[in-house]
Length: 164
Image 1 (cartoon, rainbow, N blue to C red):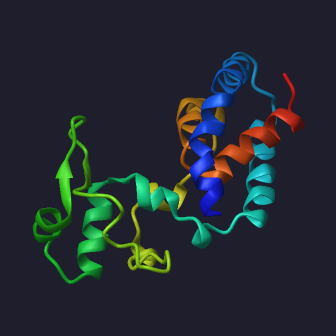
Image 2 (image 1 turned 120 degrees about the vertical axis):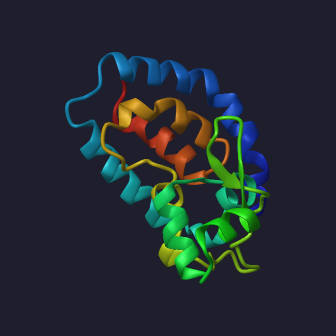
Image 3 (image 1 turned 90 degrees about the horizontal axis):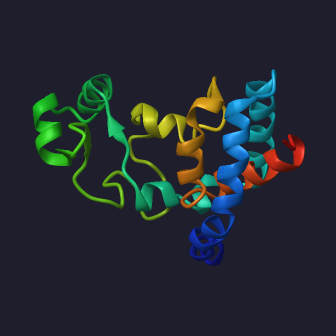
């Protein structure tokens, strides 16, 4: 997996123009059952990919933390919300709460999340392949192909299964 992760940004870059054209067409004329097909592709891809052998998302990017995330996680950690914010978060240029640093503070040495049961919504949904109205997040998916092997493989599978 480690070698594949080193190659992934280049693979994604090489496919970027092709994938962008594909998504532009998809946005103009999405298949009627796009979300259903994406759910199937999501299931197939994640049968092949074990997130614990990768954790590249946790190592290279940080999620946004909503107010609900902050409340839930701080309660789990037995901290006041402001203590949690002060200790782990910062405000980014978009005025969102994000981690002060990556890799994620809560990722352990075996790629397990130490706050898995209460993790942020952004982490629970990543890489967003099975989200409703998938055609609205194609730019995000394109970006995720550089980080997540599952996202990269899902896009490749989409192009085979749903040629446009």
